[in-house]
Amino acid sequence: MTTSKDRLRLWLRLLKVTRGIEARLRDALRREFETTLPRFDMMAALSRHPEGLKMSALSGVLRVSNGNVTGIADRLTAEGLAERVPVPGDRRAMMVRLTDAGVAEFTRQAQAHEGWIDDMLGDFSADEARTLATRLMRLAETQDKEEMTNAL
Amino acid sequence: MTTSKDRLRLWLRLLKVTRGIEARLRDALRREFETTLPRFDMMAALSRHPEGLKMSALSGVLRVSNGNVTGIADRLTAEGLAERVPVPGDRRAMMVRLTDAGVAEFTRQAQAHEGWIDDMLGDFSADEARTLATRLMRLAETQDKEEMTNAL
DNA sequence: CAAAAATATTTTAGGCATGAAGTAATCGGC
DNA sequence: GCCGATTACTTCATGCCTAAAATATTTTTG
Image: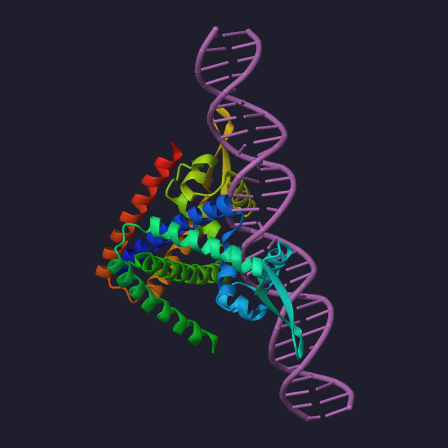
């Protein structure tokens, strides 16, 4: 009967926990590496694509707006961690990729990041973590499906 | 052995799901009510305290910075949804509370909000929602405890 | 092929977020 | 009763974020 209240409560908890972890990550990234979560996310995406990603692809992967990607890429580039490379055959497009310095820096950051997460989610056993991750994936898939439907 | 990888994966899923739902909420709030998630959050907090909240209390409840609260309260006030009331006996402090119009508007928004969440979390049964919410609460408590420790 | 449509990116305007600095009022100890 | 410390709030500088407009370059189409 009051299922919707239970779901609402679940959502509020989900939000609280996620925001809490995000806030701690932000702090740690700032303290230890003088960087931010958006920069880290972009570098993570780029590190999974050593050949580079087009701006629009990056926008899609990170699920943030085009304009936003421009700004973050600008800052990473200014710091020498990423670079823009023209795409042969399409003068509109730009590839972004990590520089060697960017790869080195991200390697350090990613290692620390994994440790922090491990600490913060410490009271989930490996099993529990896997089960919950699977459950959440199912939810994410439902979401994506609806998104697709809406886009028609 | 690779428990940390499982936890990392759990975190990435948690983040993806939460951000996805947040993005949809943002859209819906914008489309249906010309408002934003931060405004909604503040109104929700105020609606739980009809007598009003001091700026600093609001900052604590919403877990955002003082300066941030100032801006959002400014905008709600400009729209006639909230008002600042001086605190008798302390000329530094200000109470913020919903106006009648604010209460009426929030009532409509909250109802829609509950419906959206119910849709988005539709594939959790009431039971499943309760179980997961409980599990997340335990995690949130551990977090708060650590925060306390760090503050010493 | 030229005009129109589509694509890739940047720019712009406005809101949200932080930490730090600034302003004003209150409190505590003497 | 005064003065330094604390408290409450706002302002500032900077970055993140979005949607929408602008720019530049393909691609499509009549």
